[in-house]
Length: 299
Length: 296
Image (tube, rainbow over all chains, first blue to last red; front, side):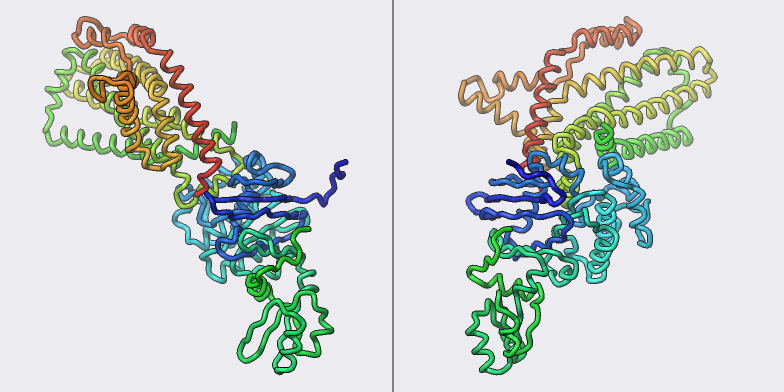
């Protein structure tokens, strides 16, 4: 018997998701569910399979296995799905031959869930004017415009693949702040990939680490802070004791030795030095170097 | 339908330079040069004005036909390059990612490009062409007035010729677009896959097909094959010249109705039908390719 449809039915559900380019396998059978109302960070090295995973979700590439986005097969039903899914894969991808007002007029006719009024509101306070040609905008302005466009789409899922690539720190901060303040609601789900993990850490509710086409970490941020601990130990005895507890990562920084532990109670670590929650970038470095680090294959 | 019309309009915005602005500039330049030529007496307005009244009907019909033919040639070139470039234009600057984020299928996008090539883009050139001919007729009539031979009767007959010829131009243009539809679809489909390489491929492909037939089935030389004969026939616009020759000789006055009846009656509609089916197949295949692989 199938489960009754509830509000918590996953927005994205993947089972045995595989993808190869020629003979080279890129994704090795990913299994994951993304529930609604969450902000997901998908993090991995270059070539780890992040963009391929997102492309499969967005119906931009064929794949093996099963993936359902809002209950639909994205590859077979991309056009229909895009009524409720918005994405930015490259902020410089807006059609450059259009003026801003022409872009809005076009989107009004093409996209049933696009609001020109909202898009204009989002551009208030910026230097972007309706008569401007998109090709004349700077990269930062183009990012603002693209963000205004996707935020003006009443979508259930927003996917951002390296949205701030090439933008300076000011634009990046403004981009994420705007997204969080003006767009996110409980009904919307956001998936972001970026190399600047620390910049998005504050807004994430869940994290997925992908390495060589495999999901090596998938958990809520609260669980990350419960499960992983960082210990800074100075004394050689304390360092030896810490090593005996099986850290997943060890590094010496400015004469101090930093350990990252998976599942070791904080009370056990506290006598050995200063204990804290590792930042996402520290955890990323730690887990990416482990030969096998799959603490939670799928939920 | 609203989305489809918006996509066709988008094609017009993207390519209005070649299909509207450039022709308009060309007309403007020629008009200014004409005025300049008259103003410095390089052209004797009195003499040319008198000449125009000798066989006014023939001169205006021939003038219209000549200029319209020129515009048709221009349209042929621009449409060829539009298909070779426009169908691949979405790949430029990663714009494909933007278009793929829109709730429109690849088939709808490519169909809109082909429909634009059949409607708004040639329609735009048609409008500029009529404007250029109107200017030409205007200049001609002014010269007859300068020569003191202008009259309401002459003006009326010029207006009638313009209306008749505009109708003929429209019908011939529509038939030409239908006749060359499979070529446009083929070049567009190739451009979807290989970008601007479609330009040399459009020439290379028929040659390869003909040579292959010659190699496998034999023949006098690589271009004495059934494939080449068919492509040769399919490349030439099937106009019946019988009636036009009589008009050209001056043995018969031009009548749009007679010409169109003769032209449409002798047009190879069967080939147009097959061509349309071929065009549909080419666009469907290209859309499938675009769906599967052409992200950037």
